[in-house]
Amino acid sequence: MDYGAASPVDPRVLEEMMPYFSDSFGNPASLHSYAFEAQRAMERARGQVASLIGAEPGEIVFTSCATESNNLALIGAALRYRSRGSGVVVSNIEHISILNICKELSKQGFEIRYVPVDRDGIIRLDRLEALVDDETVLVSIMAANGEIGTVQPIREAAEVAHEHGALFHTDATAAAGKVPLDVGEVGVDLMTLSSNDLYGPKGVGALYVRKGLRVKPLMIGGGQENGMRSGSENIPGIVGMGKAAEFAKKEMKSEAERLTRLRDRLIKGITEEIPASYLNGHPKRRLPNNANIRFSYIEGEALILSLDELGIQVSSGSACAAKTLEPSHVLLAIGLKHEEAHGSLVFTLGKGNREEHVEYVIRQMPGVVRRLRSMSPLTPEELR
Ligand code: PMP
Image 1: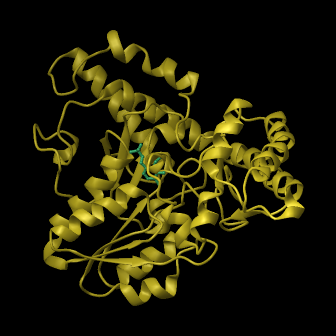
Image 2: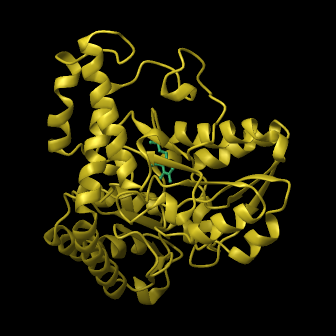
């Protein structure tokens, strides 16, 4: 139940990729039939990714991961449109990649402003309105948060950005394939996507760049990807991301319904069975596959290790920040105390999870929590 950290490649996607490793191995830049085959495969994938978000194929730039797409979006747009202003506005629960990119932009003279979220983890639109002004060049608000699952009002956020002539980027890594996203409907200028979160291979991502916009490339070279991301394309990976996007579009509705049922059963089962356990994030406006639950008087890390011994894999936050001892910035942003943030677990459900897995977790958790609580001097007598 840690699909947020990594997902298996869908076997149907892998099958589609296989010929492009050794048989159809051409470079799309060449001028012979091997190249044409690679070009066709790449353009088909571009169309499949575009279709998932209601974009045109020419608006998709393939990259190596969501982190790269975030870099290209924020640094590329901020530098390219610097003459419009030097303000950048992001939420304070963005993925660590966005927050660290902002630190870098700040060193380069940009003024970064952070929009807070409410106790459910939804961005405060009133505060966004107060922070965006005519000096703002870019606003970036994630479509959904991978840790607490909250789905953000990005259409409204994009409107605020556009009222002031700023560009709007959304990191849709955790949201794509889970909730419907349409770039036209939302009014997005730039959108980050990741292949692995769609059950495609790792090592591929994409950035949607609205027609007519350009971002300053980070990778300088032969001018591939419309000059915005040079380097010979990862054709098998791109083919895989395309196929994964096609399945995500086709199967999103039924899979979201299935996962929502499992998620709600998991949340109810755990919070009803275990005293002093609470859901983090909004109860309804959340990703169908995310449950983030905090347990008073214990450490998330101890829980993770104990659960792993029982064959249950979960996370204590974003995998990207798992090795730091800092509490999750997302949980602090929703107002949790340090010890509450440390006692939280993230369950991200996925294709391989079935009802019996959820029931197994609900059966195992109370014993594990009781045992760990009995070892903690902080635990009140009635919970021992
Ligand atoms: N943005 C969000 C919202 C994420 O959850 C993640 C991690 N899956 C990333 C960006 C970074 O993805 P990657 O490590 O694949 O670049």
